[in-house]
Length: 94
Image (cartoon, rainbow, N blue to C red; front, side):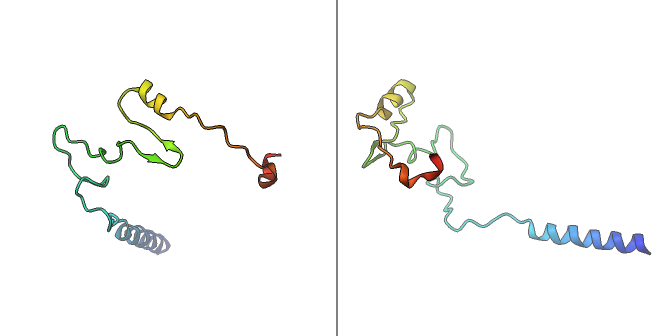
């Protein structure tokens, strides 16, 4: 009887866990290719084109993503001076 009850409890636990293991619903995934979803790309279609564009911020160019490592490293080089830290704000760094 003890073996039967142990088996029943274990089976109930496993089956209840299986009921919860469902694919998550992602409300923002419009499956258009604009977001990285389960969109199936056509031959030669680049789903990451919008993410690979040159992005400029106040700090400058993050990356050109030109396909050339040398060109991308050139885009990432900065002529701005290094940031001067205030040690008082970071006591864990000594």
